[in-house]
Length: 212
Image (cartoon, rainbow, N blue to C red; front, side, top):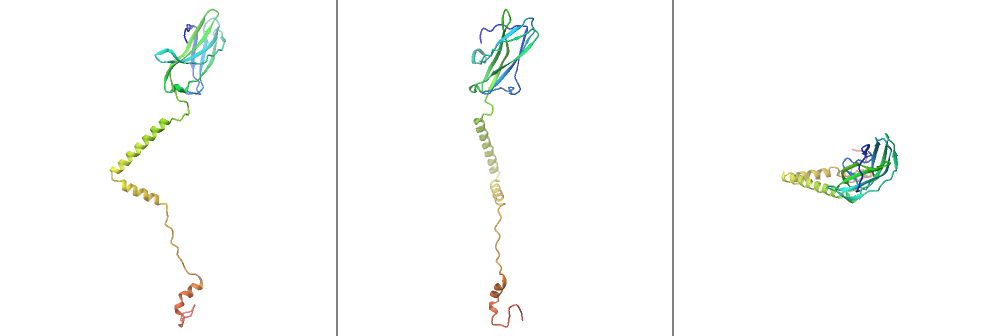
């Protein structure tokens, strides 16, 4: 935005970001964002808010625009001593994530004789990855660090000479839950078994069920 008129000293314009999106650490890309403009007329004549515009610029090169967001046209008249609020929606492209830019938002208004403009937000912001996006690079880094940590533990155990004992303990713990099968005990039942056991006594004075 170029050729912006001067601001009216009788106008207070402030920006507020709603609490539904946390922008304290940066602005998430590919998400619906909005700025709330608080506009107060402290002058003696009414002013008409004609349009609101915002842009994303390169730091240290403010004249270089990365994005010009959609212009809003409220055309709302604010009477002397009154105030009004306006909502300005915008969205950041995902390709901008990981970089810092200057976000500038300006309200344009006029009275019966002149036109004015008040930049109600002008600050450097960090563009973040979309909320909920899987970060594969972070996962890989965590897995590598975990592998290094496990390798150091293994090396420490081996250096201490406790590796065989540790392996033996692991094998013992793994086999603790297994029970040896019980040996089956066979026993004879009924008179048939007794007759087989007494077969050698046949022909003697011994009688089954009675001892001499």
